[in-house]
Image (cartoon, rainbow, N blue to C red; front, side):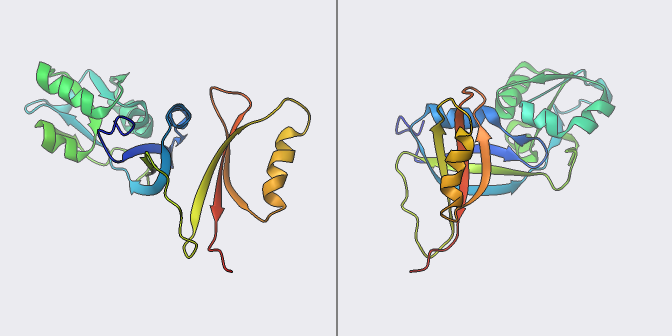
Length: 204
């Protein structure tokens, strides 16, 4: 939508404190010509939703995004229902609501209950109450960072084959006192490296 000028910004979940990096979304960054212009960290609270009148013991299946299911693993194990991954919880909510699926629950936010007319059967069902997800803010055009505030830089590059190539690449940063906060290997490209570096305030 951002690439097609239908929206000014996109918000992309990229990492979760429980389930780690969302590699699929890292790969999406490489497929689209968008720029990272911001970062947001939000506490994530999941609820179990169902249509009005449905009781917890009636549920046979639970739908949600794979990340939502993973982050509520302990609760869902106790519930003993089938889990089905979907592209997003909002789409699953629309599906269940429109088809009146009385034996299906949704793992989603409490806000989804308000939007789609669900009842909340259980709240804060995530495995860790300190569950945090990091989101990237994406735009068509880059933003030049101010030098009086700390900022992060994201770099993607491909390595040639050969001994010590990764060491040589990372040494470039170390020799210039640039602190790296994360080094990742792309899940689709063995030799493609993604680097996140933290740049403190620059003083002249």
